Image 1: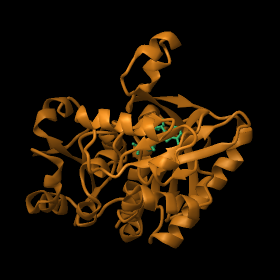
Image 2 (image 1 turned 180 degrees about the vertical axis):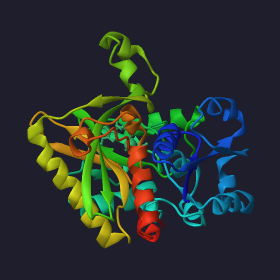
Image 3 (image 1 turned 30 degrees about the horizontal axis):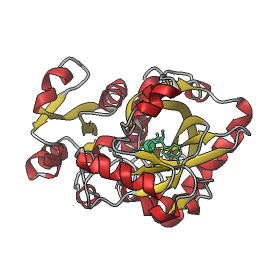
Length: 341
Ligand SMILES: Nc1ncnc2c1ncn2[C@@H]1O[C@H](COP(=O)(O)OP(=O)(O)O)[C@@H](O)[C@H]1O
Ligand SMILES: [Mg+2]
């Protein structure tokens, strides 16, 4: 029988609980320092204790995974802590498309795929001297908003960048990505594409709470002006959101466009969970600033099922369980190669 494995962080509890509920064996690649935490959860059948997550590439770890017919579920921690080359070299079957994770990590490639999918995007800014409107400056990969900053012009950009370098938060030779700031209501739209059913499901929406940009909003302008701290977008947690029903049709269209574009650009396409992240402006027009090509931690809100999945399934269905269900069906019908890379 197939088992489900993932790295101990991000959404691993949800993923393994969902797998257990589907009757699959569960394996957690766990850092020593978190052993005590994860031992609290009885649905985790086996822990592979490591010093760092990169050990998932080592023969020892890969053999254990192979013996267990494991499918590895990629999430944000894998993308943040490993290079694209390392991810692509993983021998354990990876759920979804490991090749598309490079398109998530590299901001230029990301922009290209979003364009291919016709997603409405904020304008990218190629050089600091071209900053005319308020911009957000980001790092590569899924850095989780740490060290990102806003700038109003080139001078502002340089002084904030220098400040963050001197504080050791970003490095001098890091390539930063500059994008116009899009104001509005944050909405992170999560989907699941099943290559077995050739169908797109809309799972739900979450909002990210990011520190200390949110903390700043609670301080009167007078004190904000006196602060010389560069606020970052470090994600702390998530909360649920539902959309006006009239927005749903466009949401599905964006998801479908993304799946179609990914099929053209990076075989075998966007299989499994993914998230289109952006804001709705005052005219309810969506602008997307990025995507994640795997499960996002925002799905942790819906461990007991999301509002939109309760419309599609007559049972509790988390994203972790949905993934396990897909693995189970593929195993039974001998189509694992269709849903893994
Ligand atoms: N163009 C933008 N306009 C407004 N806010 C943005 C924009 N891009 C990013 N953000 C904010 O910064 C956060 C992190 O940026 P994001 O591109 O999602 O990077 P990450 O890959 O680290 O998640 C977002 O969750 C959002 O709050
Ligand atoms: Mg993001």
